[in-house]
Image 1 (cartoon, one colour):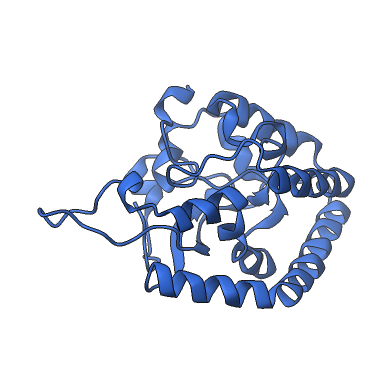
Image 2 (spheres, rainbow, N blue to C red; image 1 turned 180 degrees about the horizontal axis):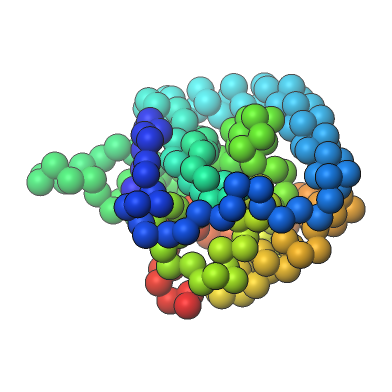
Length: 229
């Protein structure tokens, strides 16, 4: 489900999940400071350098898909606490004769499919990184509704900030199974460091440029989750 505006959600009560402790395990304060410092500098530099691109995409989205330009959805962040993630909108607000929204496939236009396949729809998440809701690198944040389906080991993916890209994304992206994605996510939690982040960012640039492992036919990483366990 898509949200144009974030709404307070008592997901701990509604979904029956256990929130991670207030201070998730850390690899060390120095590593955390280095990672956060890099995130701030890199995301701010990227937002400034890419501002013409962001403005151009925003204009195209407004002309081709209408308003609002941004897609907003509440997702679990560090410690599984909710935050509002922003992306460029990729689907129309089309409804059927019964007044219900049409399927994703019917609302996804060729322009929206192109935005997804190039990952340009993800660029506004740089603002989430600058704010501290996300990191450049980390497990991709999934829908809140899936928290109750995670195993205890899979919940460990919330011990670090979610990322725009991650170890799973450079090891198959959408071409691998959910189970394998979660294995990669937990491996990253246990092994992350600044040098690994830099390696993942460079690998991501190559993969996105080649459009390897991309799937633009449905909502970002919220399909067929039930078979992951």
